[in-house]
Image (cartoon, rainbow, N blue to C red; front, side, top):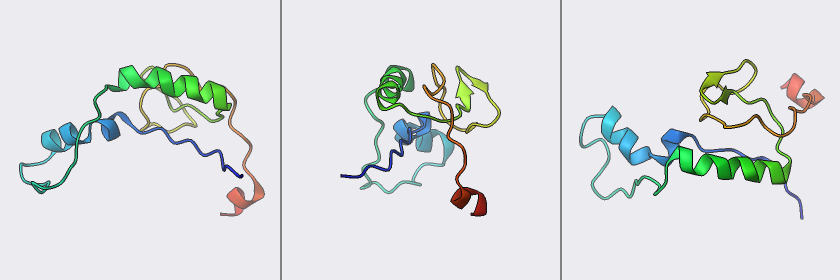
Length: 99
């Protein structure tokens, strides 16, 4: 079995998509029969579980949003992390650099 080890956290907007659309757009943007819903938990409730999983998996990367503070080198649009990624970001490969 092969796993590419790509772990992508959803954003706070992703887990509250229905609320976001209702607040950001005029009524009727979503069709009545669309099943767009909010998840039954908040970002603050689920984020510690993401971090625990990242510890178990040995996630590496540059945190872009640490407790609301935007950090250089990471994704400034990600949801706030309670802690930095457990491991430092990996060096770019030749393929990444060439791409």
